[in-house]
Length: 155
Length: 155
DNA sequence: GAGCAAGTGTTGCACAATGCAATGGTGACT
DNA sequence: AGTCACCATTGCATTGTGCAACACTTGCTC
Image (cartoon, rainbow over the protein chains, first blue to last red):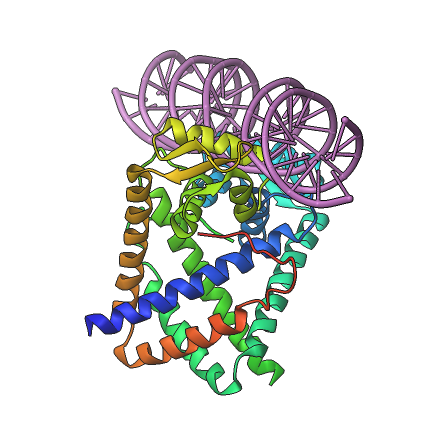
């Protein structure tokens, strides 16, 4: 049974390498001008909506100063906007611009299509099992989210 | 059927996010002083054995100048050695030191145990399916490796 | 209402990672 | 002997990063 788990762990590690490579590729393939950390920031805004700087830094797991400067560059690149929060003069609200949203959509699309291509090469008989298995795996990996625990969001 | 593939793609993407997070965690958890790119370099040496600088840059998919300077730092940190190649005076051979090998082993161990923990939380009935499915997926994802194609190695 | 603590974003400083271009040395092949 | 490709390095510029010091704002207390 421990052997059982070992076998699975090996399979997961192998698949993991492939998936990480796919993720990396889907980003480097996009607009040369955008970097992976910048893309992560865009993804955060896309999934959570407009956020203040501190919240972004928190989501990314980086220092607020890093967030400040990354937003500087993304504003310059026209990917996000930074506006004062009318409700609180000490907060700034950062939001995706249309262009930024388009970049996220592009990368996501590319990644989906790459994974789709791989899945299509799988024997059809294995596909149903893959869904069941991966779903169970993802559920088992969902952290209990105990107090204060906050995973940085990864692409 | 296209719907079929879509469903699977979603499941893969979800699992992918979890795995990327696990990978990131297993590195940041190790010795604070090592960075992800440095760790990737160590992994390359661990899997391929001693290499010349150009080969390392190639494996990592980075510019040779980047490899030069990363090796500088890793030599200073005692993780790798850089010695002249007796067979060719224009090449330098970089090899893992004992300490470097220990770091790779440590991270790998940590990652394995984290994945094992997740697998152990899965319903046992799903485990066999996971192995079959992931193996098929990894095989389908193995690029044909047509001429000149060379994927950078990812952790 | 004054004062203080916590929250918020910014800037200075230092360093790692990165690419590109230029350079100097080495090998191999004609 | 000459030429061309390969190899590692260095200079320069940019991004990402953390830490510490600041200045400003809010909220709460006394």
